[in-house]
Amino acid sequence: MRSFLEDLKSKTFTQGEPLEPEALIIAQKVLHNMGMDFIPQSYTDFLKHYNGIKYDGSYLFGATVDNDLDIIDKNEQMDKPENTILLGYNDFDLLCYDYRQKQYQIIERGNFKVLDTYSEDERDYALSNIMAF
Image (cartoon, rainbow, N blue to C red):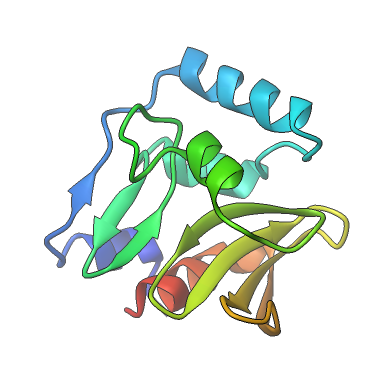
């Protein structure tokens, strides 16, 4: 499989402003203060390239002031399973990181049924899944 970053090059999408290290630190602290763990390193590595993206009704969040893409706002506003950080969504599913199991999860929005799981090494598969690439 090509990397998710390579796949993005052929798509037309909207992205958040470039990642500011201070914004990521603040996001990490706020999420931690909300009772969550920190954003996984594999996802922060992605944010260094694309600090949140919108594509055809799918979203990946970042440390940004764009309300549609802000990871803090979405974790405050949207329902999600316990012990997870919400990283993105589409019309049907959520992309969460389960920090207890250390894995990405594709979760059905209505009933929180886990549909797929991915290790941190499989980040690109999880991102491609939620973006329907």
